[in-house]
Each structure stands twice: as structure tokens, then as C-alpha cells.
Length: 460
Image (cartoon, rainbow, N blue to C red; front, side, top):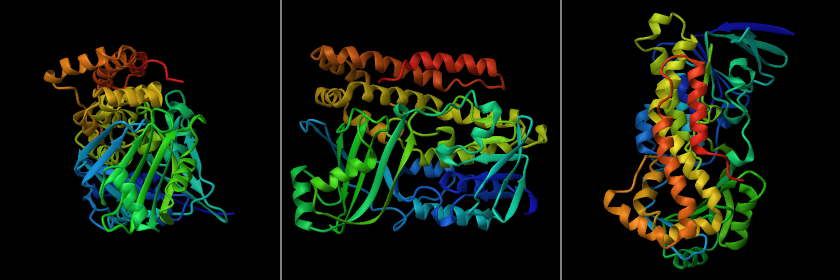
């Protein structure tokens, strides 16, 4: 079997949105970069629509999408409690529904325009280590290709093909259980019966162009969002629940929606997948290796949105390894330099993500009935819900606290569950952003143990 070897400054494994933007950002700063994926490039990454935020595109250094890469903005989102008794209306929700396949194509085009060399259909990928450090990858069937670099980036998602091969990360990056995974499906369909679509909207107090989101239908952490286009030609359906086997799966939830709503017609496009729901791994860098996106669990835990954070991580990584401190290390794969990337990401987002992991655990523990009670109590109001959609930290206004306390006082069984969880969320927000500044594994261990105690055991 023949083989060939090529050296780069950086090799990125995984050509989805997180990997493609990381490759672009690194190449844009003058580094030689290879982008590798086991699939054809056009099929890399997610192939469905995903909600991303304008501020995330800006923070990631990526131009915001415009139609047809994005769908028209939703004027109203109607959030319905599991019992159907409460509807919360969010006007002009902040999310921007974006076609992941089209966004991925644009990001990969950005990367190649900056000189990134791509390798697709890279089957049989094998990491090569020198001690604890990744120094090369090899792949290919009839001809083995060997790529070497001082820095490798794992953007391969939950598979974590490089992460799992790194001895220093085995302790810090455990496999994720079903209680920390979301099984989701997101599809666009043609509308086969416009009258049926209009009747669905009328039943839910909505109009064409709106989203109707039914919360907590399959356990406390679950959703079914149905968006009917303004011209009544297509409908988007997003469903998801915990992947622990107790609530079904994204595909089974989707099948149930189609059974209940026969006006939904043939598939246009979409897909299903598993999404991590935990806070980022406490350590997601090692000598010669940095993780971005789902491989690092850089996902908003309250509703499993990770695209925007994965894009941002690529920019933070590129800024770090080409920044002022990089020259003092002389090696862009130096673990102290990569630790700085990890620290910068966690300082900016660690508190947010830990806090909302507590919120996600609360919804799981409450279950469908508890989520109904929470919405019916009025404690979960429009302001807090909008902050969650915008992936921002939010605390109740001081003037609202007496009102919220009074509402919980009338529901003591709910208060017993909610108040401790809200306290955990506040503490997690404070602690999650205090990631150790310098490379110190003992300090990292103490920090992670404290955060684990604050969050408490997983509900189950």
C-alpha cells in the first residue's frame, strides 16, 4: 500500500459548521490548514435547519445568513404548556432559523478561499501519538494519507475521534449517558392541505408564519415546535426529548406529529441526531489538541443548541493561538497556550452554560406535570423565557421577586422543587465562569468537583 505525507500548521477533523469555521479562522490568520471529514464535504455536519442568534454570528466572525440560507423571521412563538392550559406568546423571538447544509457550504467555501486544503471521504482515520501528544493522522484505503501538524482540532462531534485517542483527556471527557443526550429531529415538509394547516393555527391562536411550541409532551425536557410558513406552502417540525429510553426518540415523536396532523405532506429535507446536553467538559485541550463544538460539549444545555457556540469556539481558538502570547510559546500546540483558549471560552460562557444545565436538570426533574405547574404559576414569564431563547443569563427583576414568591407560596409542592434548583442555577453561574487561569490540573479538579456538587446528581 502506498502512502504520502503532508505537513500543516493545523489539521481540523470534522468539516461541519464548527470545524469549517475553525479552519477558516485559523487560515485567515496566516496558518496552513487541512480540513478532513469522513464524508463528502457537501454532506458534512448537520443537514437540517437550526436556530442561531445574530450575536453568535457576530461573535464568531461570520456574516449572518440571508434567505434562502435562512428562513423568514418568525413574528410570534406560541409556547403551550403540556396540559394546554397556558399559552405564552413571545413576539419577535431572537432566533434565526438557518439551513445548516447551506451554512456549512458557505463556511467551507470561506475556508478554501483562504487556502485551506480539504480531504473528504477520509475513511479509516487513525490518530498517531508520540507519548501523550497527537502528532499525525492517517486515513485512506488504497493509498494512506498521513497529515502532520503541531496542532490538531477535533470538530468531529459526539464521536470525538481525536478526543478519544488522547490519553490526557480520557479522565476529563467521559462518555455521555442518555440522561445528558437529546434525541432530536428537524424536518421541513410540504403542506398537503392548506385548510388543515389553517385549522391547526386557529386551534392554537396562531397565524401563518408563527411557531407553535408544545412543551413537555415527552417528559419535562422535551419540545415539539411547528412553524407554518406565511404562504402556507411548507411547515417546519422540530421535536426532541431525552435519549434515555424513557420518552421515545426524535424520529418517533416526529411520526406522532405526522399522525396527528395529516395536513403535513411530503418531506422536503431534514435530519435527526443526538445532541449533548451537559456543560462543556472541564478540560477540552491537551498537548497538540483542541476540541470545538459538540466534541467539547459546547452546547446550550437548556434546549440543546450548539451551532452558534461551536462557531464562536473556532474564533476564540484562532485568536488565542495567533495572539500576543503565542510567540512566547513557539509552538501553537503547546498545552499552556491551548489552556488559554479553554480558559477564555469558559470565562466567557462557562457560567452561562453551567447555569442553564441546572435549568435543564430542573425541567427533567419536574416532568410534564411539573412543567405545566411551573408555567401555570406564572413564575416562568416572558422575560425569563426570552433570555433562554437568546442564550443569555437572566435573573428576575427585583420588583418581580415578591410576585414570584407569592405565586410559589400558593404552590408549596412546586416551590419545594423549584427554589433549590434556582439557587443551584445562581451558584453555578458564579462558579462556572471561574475556570483556573493557568495550567493546573489539581486546581481544575477542585473547580470541577465544586461545580458538580453545586449542580447535584442527575435526575433520573
